Amino acid sequence: MILSTRALNRATLARQLLLDRADLPVEAAVAHLGGLQAQEPQEPFVGLWSRLRTFDPAVLSGLLTERRVVRMHLMRRTVHLVTADDALAWRSRHDVMLRQRMLGVYRRDLAGVDLDELAAAGVALMADGEPRSMGEVGRALVARWPGVGARVLGEAVVACLVPTVQLPPRGLWRVTAGVKNLPLATWLGREVPPLDADGTDPVGVVLVRRYLAAYGPAATADLRAWCGLAGLPKAVAQVRPELVAFRDSRGRELLDLPDAPRPDPDVEAPVRFLPAFDNAILGYDDRTRIIDDEHRGLSVAGIRVVLVDGRVSATWRLDGGVQVTPLRPFTSSEAEAVDAEARAVEAFLVG
Image (cartoon, rainbow, N blue to C red; front, side, top):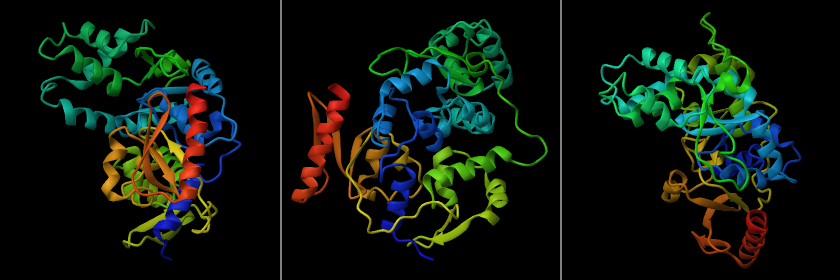
């Protein structure tokens, strides 16, 4: 069966809680979405406001201070807001990818450095439980590796080699704070489990199922684009017997959970304001289900966008109020709906 671009759009909106705002608790919504990209600390609040029927930002702040959700480098080596359980379960599976992406940037800087030795030094340094910035970590290690800059050493340790979290008040509602880090195990009081060594990939299997629940139907290339992991063919093969398969208009195979929602393509899609770097867009290799190729650059430039009829149709910013810049002409009814949602998000952000 071939799924049209519009059919894929409506499925994505439904899975991403953007077709109808959900009544989920905040922690359950973060888990369902597989986390929210969060290098801009306030953006997850907008993302959840657009997805949940009654979202109180104080609840998300409370989850951070209560250590039930955390901010850490994970998927695609970007900062994500994920549940504590997912952080522990998924971090080891991302270790190789994190190292590879870090070396893609700093290979020459780290030439001759034993990364396992650097990781051990980072663990020993942070074992005292003192929160540190990347810069502080790097400056503490530079005497041992004087040929490497403190910035590189700090980023290598904190963002890749040692599972760490960014501590509150960073990421709390309407709070501006610098980044201080602690090891994930120290912050949560639970050790990060190692990968199973029996040749299976149980974490990968979970990632496949969770991804399809929040993003399907999708191709394996879309799965890789979301998590950044290249080594999931074994997990996909294990899950495939329980999945259904479709094709998109380009002929790509799309996999999905059999009972996941795939709404009628003609169902009405409400206006939604998305934050910067929202995974509803970034979570795919082929993003044409939600954004035109000519506007694809917006999704990686940190530009906030507006969905009209389910597609990226405008950008928005907060400048004395919510300012909307259309990417195409709006009908009168579309303009009215965009204006109404703009007033609502403005009231949320500044009211």
